[in-house]
Length: 159
Image 1 (cartoon, one colour):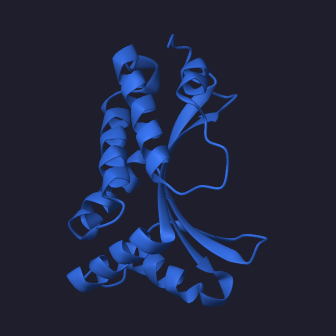
Image 2: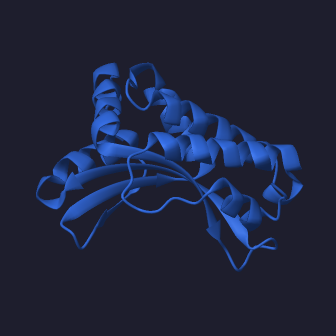
């Protein structure tokens, strides 16, 4: 594992603030009883010609997987409620620009870790939808975002 000095962690938080994203999503999943799953993700982006920075971040955090996209960009993704929560709590003192998304994703991970999805109360599911909407509204994205109503339908909830 690489060194986790406070300087390194601060640099990684700054990288996330500038060239990263925080996501909480609902994905279709045919192998789940209710047909969906939640996905928590931290993603760092970099031009593939400079992906050595992502390799360094992966080594320091000792987590994630690196992939190359067809558009010449590389991504370092960290998935999973526990992993995302652990990394966000480590970076939290240094995050400046993605503070709203970070707090919402932390809260979402805590809810999702508290109980299996099938045992979450309707109020928890509605809270998760609100957190998704909060993160989406504070993220820059070129892709279409799901509406609150669409997310409720995916979860079998009444708006």
